[in-house]
Length: 352
Image 1 (cartoon, rainbow, N blue to C red):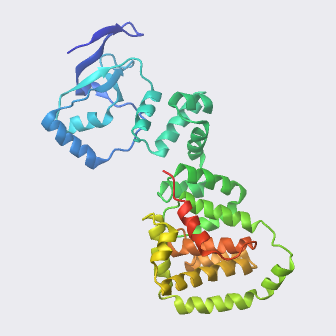
Image 2: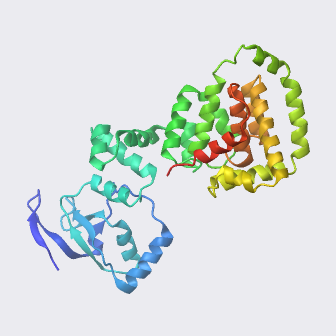
Image 3: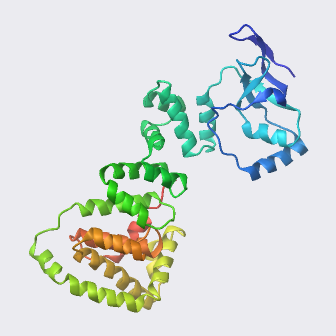
């Protein structure tokens, strides 16, 4: 079925509406925001098309540089799968009033674009003279959304490497980490180099920002702090001995506690209720050790670097619990509260 016809800007007549088009006359848009295609799902779609054909027409527009040919507006997956299925023609809807913004909006609604693809689109729009506010209105997003994605276009080299290798692809985490980098370049570089090679989440960046904030806060000169600092070496030595004695069992317990809270979404109060008396005591002792080390620590940077190197602090598991306990101790204004530390883990589930 051939649709209506309309004269384009060059005076050429092109059909409009639903029709079937020779697949060799169609090409993909070089500015299509979506660049990544899952090959397995493409193969599955090709098999479906072999059996049932293309049920939903793709959207195309006339190619102004090659009369009689078309550029895909939307439907690149169906187009690729149709080629793989051996089709010679494909149903298409010819839409002359279509823009790159429409492509982005459709893919955003289906959650089909990566953060980098969104950033590249924003970059092209900025280069074309549009403001961030105009781009936000264009695709129905907020100004902060545009700002955070635009930050991916000019990441500092260390953060660019973290993004390219897949250690961190969360836009919010990268944006916050970029801000930290600008104010604390050497500390961020050290943290990235010494932390584990696991993925970096929003929670990890938040915890690191808290560490930097506390590091810059001068310790209190109160009598209590002076007393605790003079006894700090003894406390740390006792904690180290206790840590050595329990090293064979406590990491697995802390890892289990962390995973039950973070992955299984178990409530801390339910978790504590179900623990045996021995495990409760072991958990409390292990976490309180790191709380006291934070309270009595005299050289925060040196201690933290050493803890990152030996695995005591990390982004996940037992190391994350220990780091949070250490940060709570550094506050020095609060007493040890195991439930408060566990609830911090539970209360900072990563947002989607």
